[in-house]
Image (cartoon, rainbow, N blue to C red; front, top):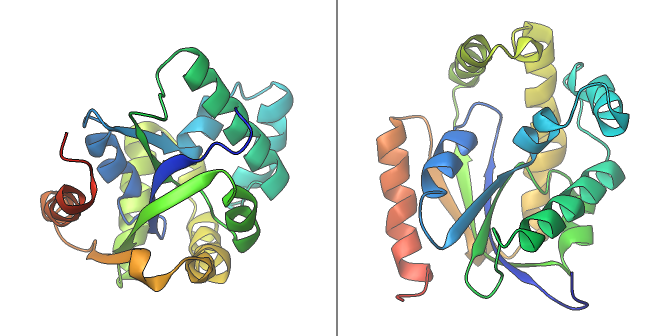
Length: 201
């Protein structure tokens, strides 16, 4: 990556189960957006490789992957995407899901990202979020999300760490979205805002 280069970026924030991955996957179909889910990247890394073993010891307990390891994996992923010309910074905006998850990550990513919008997917019903996580775990065979203890730890980690990370950014960048309803309604609210901020051409 060139020195001083910044990637235009939209951030998806929200507790586990708020629908970030669902919305990111749909929006990834837009020509100008590249959805990157750190959770998906972690899960695609071979489980018994060097990175995989290190990641597993945290995710299996509902803990966050350490900042330094997360940053190294993210940088490598961007580099690979650019080499394959799947990501062209002059054309694309990043749509990040699951990054940054700590204030330290936000600080470290600041020289790399030009954040133009943050969508905060808010869900007030913790029970609903837990049910969504269980349903996803069942459909995707993600046994780490089935345990109530692990789910509660992930939700608590969100409130303790990730939610606080929003304070790193200017408040005018944050667009609150009610994520408790139908996915199609959430998408409608996001797209309405995107039509205002993305280039017309």
